[in-house]
Length: 378
Image (tube, rainbow, N blue to C red; front, side):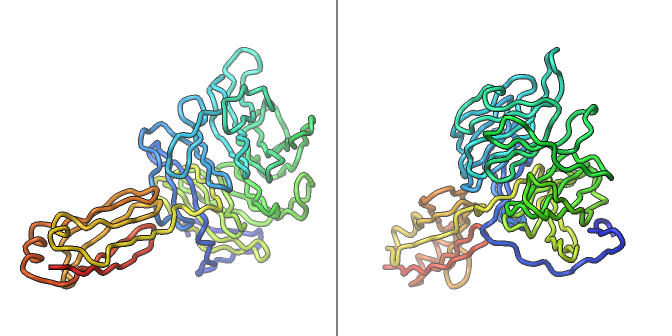
């Protein structure tokens, strides 16, 4: 068995997955660009095309932040650049985490100067560039993630530190050492939105914990291990309801449904080949497809192309049929309400001239298909 979820002394796999919420989405990096997909990897949609992007993260309202160059780029759901954020000092941001309310970005960077070199974690306002010492900056800690909107969880980024995790509570000057696992060195992870579970990794294992009290209380109970990755694990991320987990391996993004009460899981499955650095959020990957077509159209207008009104955040395809046979196709990436024209091909135009009182158009996008029938007026 290539992958498994194990509880010390017990091993149990389930064959059937509990369905995740259809509104969820995963933002991720692929081939240097930012992508979105549904929770199961369907509906994959590329948001950026210029390259150079890495480690995207999303807020509860769907706002996205990703690293490009030595700064943070804040994007909307269509991939449009809203503004730059962060600080380009040292290496610039490496692994960002956008707060659920989209107001702040926690990120780590490597300080390359002669004074206090090494990993540091800082905060930036998401809507503007922010000096790395304006809000918070601490050395020796890395791979931050958020616990609600008020706490940042950081992991050990220094060989000289003995603790695994540290919590920074906004508005409180002092930081608080948190949980340390005696059996492994935790280098990254995430607490779920309900603050009842933690997934953390050292690269070789993802360890799953139950939180018997919300952080910063140290009431952490190790439950299960995910092991035997292809290469190494990176960036485990919980679904908004805390029932499922996604993560990166060297061959792409994987996911499984998790039951910590009985320490069971569905067999992990690959959902995005070649995907990296997933971040799960509650907003759907794309706007649900809607499409309208005229109820009737003249033959002359139809020969020039049928205009459809479509709305989606997905790739929309349309096929025109006459007597159940395709006579024309169109395809377009859509991020808002727009017009899609379907032109009949040469054979289709010839068939339309010979006769036929109705054409059918099948429109698909984002995993949904709709059919529209149009009367041909001669």
